[in-house]
Image 1 (tube, rainbow, N blue to C red):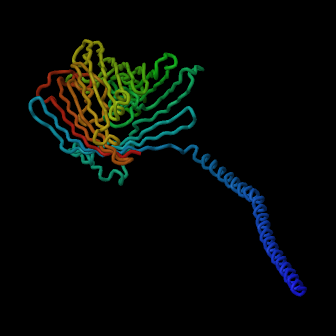
Image 2: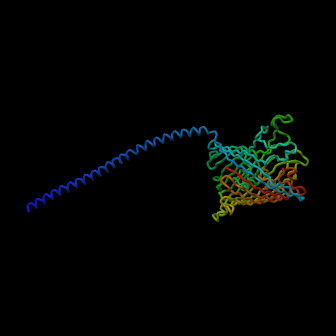
Image 3: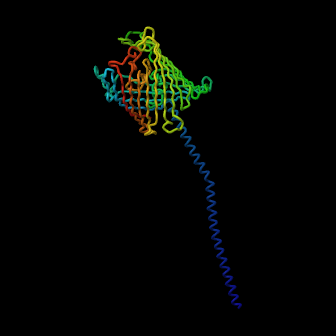
Length: 485
């Protein structure tokens, strides 16, 4: 029994010792694992503590690079400060089909009149208040004109390949514009002033048909290039009328001066006794413009207008003319009716002209003062077939017997439709093909009630019965592709 008890005690002791050894081993292993985890955690914490130091170094390096690049950029700006003119290009290739019906029944036509027109626009801002605008223009029929080959052929096949004595470069626009938010200390009136070769063609009204932003003048009475000055004043805060402004304009269409080395030996640039300076002054006034509905008015007077007497061979001074326009325009019809009407523009314009003949002279065939008038309606809307990238338009205008506009610069091959003493209408479609390319197709029809619509103020401008070889009706079909950027 004692042996058994001793044996059990020995076994228990041995077992307990073995169990204790096993426990010690497990604890040792767990401690080693825990220690390894603690070491890893300490390393991770140490790494995290070192990270800001690494970021600071990287940030310092980046800042150094930025500082270096900034210095380089400043040098580039300083180098280009006097050479940062922004250019834009408007290049048009056009095909016109012209048909004229004469009063005697004869017809004259040109089935395919082709032309290129290039306008290079430029803009430079020297400071916060002053800008320069310019435009160089090239507008030419394809090839050489046949009328110049009758006596002395001068084909333009080598225009840019052979040296010549031609120094001609056409400048369509060149003027500076000064702007200020305060006029003589009055913060309620912002204003601009400008002098130079004016942006006086393709003004409000005709700009929709030619597919571009409006220029300065109202095209119902004035659409000619001239040199002059203008000053605009935004007076909406003074009048309380939304968007109201006024612009005073003046210009010179002809300078009365003999050129240097004149054939009669007169001193250079002295007054020429055969003519006077042709000047024009006017006022454009917009009493209201809220962005959708607007009213536009203008008044202008031109002096010493020229023309020819019967059998005359030189221009003479015939007198003065007054011109006035009243236009209503809406950009968007209604409010949210549909997408088409939201982007439709409609305008209605009424214009008048009044002659003041010089003593002993006749203007428009009469020695008495004559008043003429014209009505012009137009609508420009998204094309229902392609509303996002195409526009369609319809215009109609009618001029009376003694109507006279100054629209010699209207962009059309058949003559100014606005000047018509009769009825004119046209339809057109503008299609945007790519970001830069666009296509325009247009049909214009003019029926003349009287002659002289596109003449000057002498005999050629007199309104007479349309008989014989006078043009009774003109038709112009136009298609062009334009590249603009």
